[in-house]
Length: 407
Image 1 (cartoon, rainbow, N blue to C red):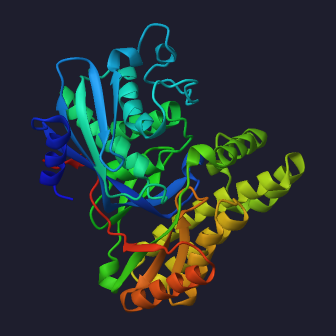
Image 2 (tube, rainbow, N blue to C red):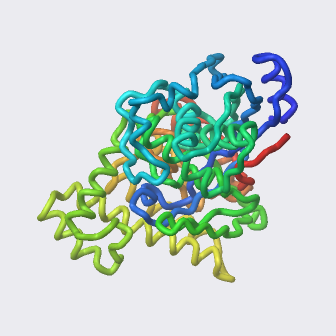
Image 3 (spheres, rainbow, N blue to C red):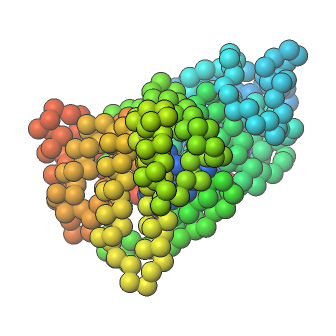
């Protein structure tokens, strides 16, 4: 999508010219699922599907946000978001309480951009009134972080028209807090950090405890391969599924084990830890622990393979398959459509495949040689038809730059 097209959309909706256009990408998580809120390791990459925000300042304290795909506009007073006696008054910029607001002023899709305005004000930034036009090429509900892209694009747009700067780390942090507290989704920092820090031709090895981001070259074209996204078109909604239950189980297990987070459990101690949690809590929680511990190890193994001079695709694909099996069996966040997509893609020649994102629907990714692409797509499409599922959609995931101003 061109910046000129986004500018025209703004003018048609609001009149006048926008002060600028900002964009933030969606992401695929190559490996490392449900480890971010356990202070662990993840390996995402920003993709060439993004949210775009054209914005202009207003003289008053009104924020108007228009979602082009929905044809809906929401208008709020910035002063009302921080009015005397509101829940917002009790939360400072460094408050560790990430529990959701009991009654946010705006709900639904608009909670994400309005939540960003709210959290930036809470952090002390001089947010001005603005008209913001939003349009996106990130499929909604596909597990590709459409909400994080929206949040990060909005954050940059509000900073741009209000006259202040945000570092990548600040953008990611405030966007995550907006989603946790205002939109009420207990996500970790993976999605927002992916959108903020993305780089062309690279995956991001992120330590979610320290916040360290280490780009890793991921040149699949040199291997004549690609990462294929298989959108099952089974929409998920993290605020309405078992995501919060999984996070609570992990926090309960960490407290029981006396560690800050499950990231602190060494792989070598897993058998003993599993037995201890199974007896002291329950076996389901023990399986949640097993997934997090083994998934952290898989991320580190994946990165080690990428950095080995003799790296090849089959061992990467093997780690992806292990990850999917763990998400399906131990963490129980897969779906029949995801399982079918993964199994069929591998049977048709993919080196490996796995669900990506929080689960309960959304997308799978497959590591595919370019000459096998058509065979894999045809096989998955046929399998879905035979099972009576909605026809999936496919597109290659291209590692792309992170949130930025484009015009």
